[in-house]
Length: 457
Image 1 (cartoon, rainbow, N blue to C red):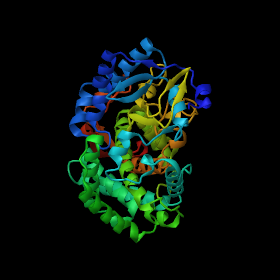
Image 2 (spheres, rainbow, N blue to C red; image 1 turned 90 degrees about the vertical axis):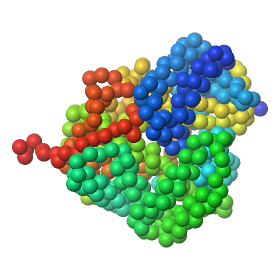
Image 3 (cartoon, rainbow, N blue to C red; image 1 turned 135 degrees about the horizontal axis):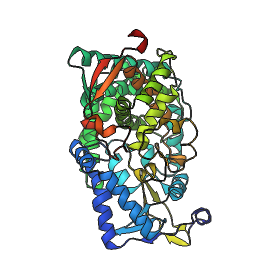
Image 4 (cartoon, helix red, strand yellow; image 1 turned 30 degrees about the vertical axis):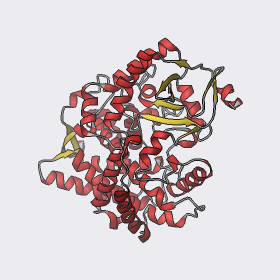
């Protein structure tokens, strides 16, 4: 039976897409997103996406369909499955606020993908198990606390790895690309999650990468139980050390209900750090081309004690703005666990709701739509704009967002403290023109130069 709460809060009536428009959605929105990689990004897919401006085409098509069909969810029936593309920000908020009942994050496609490497992860759990695992994740990750209790170790790890990265770059030709940044970022993630002893365990990250690559194919992916077993054994060896200062130590200190599988939550923490690194690297690209915002960051760093945990609100806002401009999770998925009422119509249980974040983050009605504007995360603008969902929203919001923002802003601050960056092909991020809707992080390259303060000239 449909919920009366659903009827009271959703005014927009769904419309059914014509066959031609279903095909256009598949070709221009869904297929390019899958080609770029949902669980782990594909280099060729991202290069294609930027070259052909696929996100601009996708948001243009969705805006066109919203004008033609109305603001309600656009229904698609494909291969016996029910889908609904959410076209309105209020409707997106309604779905996210309705997590996990009636709108579960554990969709069929997401479950098939993530069970490759985190079969007991909270994102693909339902019912009591989901509640228990969510509570456990919130406790370990300290959801809602901007400065984690383990911040001293996290800050030290990020700053040390940034220093080593810059040392290697400046000892050579000064070039910094995604591959070299990712190596440093992965070392940071392993230290934060598992402890300093795991710093150089590149094999663990490689195993996880192979499992994630298989997960990109979702329901079509071949199972790799042998690889997963090897990955889990290696991961458990690190977790059992419960190294002080790491999330592994916190994991052992937090009481867990039977069936929570505390160790089974750790793969997602490592997985999520990859997207965070992409956001930080894109933020560095923005700051390399936007002098005013870079001056603000440097001003913040000049009065901060960077050897101690610092919130660095403006630097943090730059990372958030990077995620607004280029969401690291373009599609937010929910699946209804029962029939739901929508503006007098009923959508059947099992309907999968597709929320395409770029449609809302780059809405042309937003005055800052295609501009780099970190200030919106500090003056209340972003908080008052329901269309923005950089870390999802509602009860399913990412419980590790504050931890991730602490580590990314610390890494960014360490990179910018004494260096300036010259971006290859800076014209695409010029502040006097709209920023591109797609930015291939694989293609970003910089030259790092020592930064000389004005008063030293």
